Length: 266
Image (cartoon, rainbow, N blue to C red; front, side):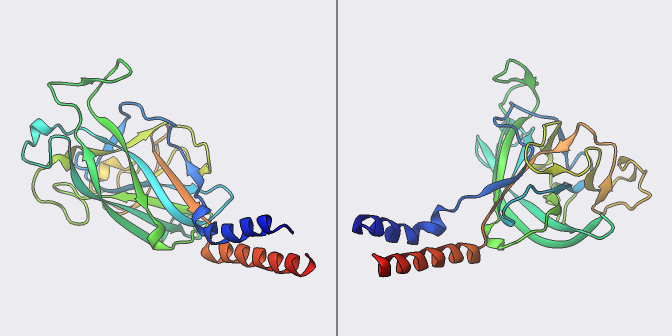
């Protein structure tokens, strides 16, 4: 082996972990966002958590990130002392659950809360004119959760839930009105391009209002459970995963063994 080739491989070895990139294992986000989407308002619907049961595509299973699309209807003029003229910060939580043997909600596998910047929608009276020439009452934006610190390896199927506090609802209600009351989770009929939506008609939902469940609350109220009649109105999310650290170490050791063998025969 030429010294130049050997040097190239040796120099490349320490970079292997840094070179590994996340694979998208589930996605029903559009390539580019529209100005806004249909959405679920947590305060308006007495919601504490909302999400979906999904199946990941083949690939890595160590979660690296999750991205969701949200919609904010709040204007700075409605809350002039809250945040800045461009937006405000609010805690949002991504929960990852297993799927139980009966297909329902299983154990909580991991949870990540991030303090997220929420942009105010354009100010002015009534709906604003979007870049596409249509009028909207809210503004769509993405929230990306860094899940790498969880070191969470997930099964093929999971249930995810997005939770945050509003004035009256959530794990710890704020107790006072604020722009977070106008913060919604975007839901639309965006095609799932990676992975599988296990039921186009169902979501997982925790609402405190019995009549909002399709069964009128017969299956429980104020609990995170499956609900039907949601066709065409699905929460938007993308999940990415990376190789397990052990698998990268094996690759590195294999290359080192290759180098030693080539050196002896050079």
